[in-house]
Length: 254
Image (cartoon, rainbow, N blue to C red; front, side, top):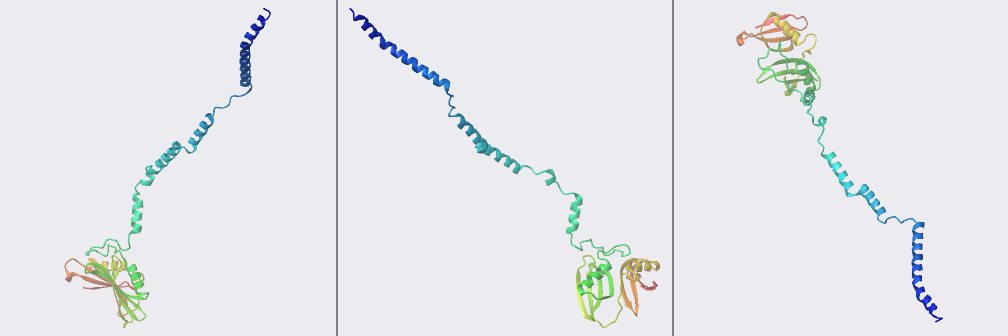
């Protein structure tokens, strides 16, 4: 009978130890949780890095840049780039590119008293001098020959006489012949002491008609213009008026 209590203690002790051990483990777990910070989520930082990588070089950014470049490339040109040139610019460019001698030719029945040849007398002389290489002008004539108005010049250089035909519309030298100069003709000038315009005016003071041509040369030591006038009644009614360049005197030959 004296051993019964001992059995009773022995039987209930194993049941208390698991309870105490469980409490100890729970307390340790609670203490550890309160004293340490929770670890960051392992996926948070990579997610942020992934987002940053997408912004820097992700396909979306590349697509946006490509789209912007495409828009800039295919953008329609501005009005300032595609606008048509102004009339003034077009006219200026056309004039600058037009070759010399493209003026309209005078009709065959033009009156030289009122019409201006595309290549006037002074320019014709300059063209002749350039073709010969300087020299002295001893004769010049203008008339309508065949199908065009044409200048005829005689220039003497180094004892040689050069005969030139120059198109009065284009300025082209169409013929150039030379020979020994056997005459001693004085030089003449279309600028002094009398111009062709002044000679024509003097001729029309004494006769009337269409000025169909004129020439300037020396004869018997006297330099004069010969102005050709057509009266409209046929060849027999035409007249020539000589005008002395020094005195202005006129003489009708018809």
